[in-house]
Length: 335
Ligand code: HSE
Image 1 (cartoon, protein in one colour):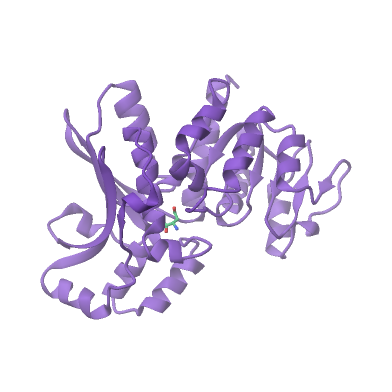
Image 2: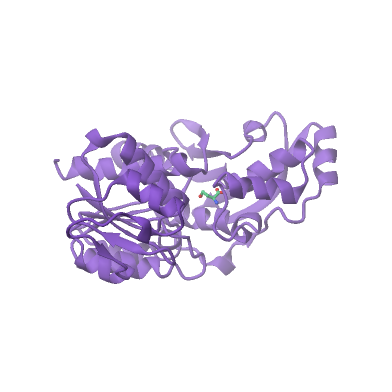
């Protein structure tokens, strides 16, 4: 299966790293496009190792020459011209318009490609349109958009809803790794700025970390869950969204003294969604979820609450979600 990557930051490089380590998977990267660091196309397949070496030295222009190699196509041209089976959209998420990723998805369908998204924008803001343009012919996967590679859609959407007819009535969780990491580190005495810098360095934060700390990344995930599980396209101004920027070290210390923990909690119901910091008693299972780990609780009429806890951000962690989607498409194509 041939794939192309739009975006080659933390997630794209993570995908190249996983594929480089597993050549037996028969998934080839034929194209890569970045915003400012060049693009490459080679129908016979680019070397994941050489892609990583080139980007680590600052620009894809450092990739060695090869017969048939094309450089510096713009993303739309690369999407239209490349003989890829799947486009992977892993450029930075835009939580206001979902662009330009949405147009890239349209171009991918129009040129015969399935789509895997780590980019949250189009799934959060234009889910019905996205599925409409894909039609019956093209597949769209988005496991990495919520909880990185922890399989919340494989469990909730595929296993519960689609395969076993077990509806989900309500969802609650910790869905942003960066803020949970910051709150955890602040609980251990680190200051806010240092904890945020670490979260960026570890590849947890968005390109613009304001989206994390002000709650918009978590709100984007709430919109995705609302679309997928309740068929309800929320608008940003319909949700109550509050981040963690108002929480001080003193707030955290006073919660600790009372046997409680601050967590940024997402709640999604068929009627709407909210994102807000909450003080949870230590007896609440979500209170013990620390670092960049995320958790999601699906409320089901048949099983009661089912909670999935696992990685919520990070390079290999998110790339694994993309890889799982690629392998799922590969299976459905019978390859
Ligand atoms: N910035 C996001 C987070 C990345 O911290 O959770 C994963 O979506």
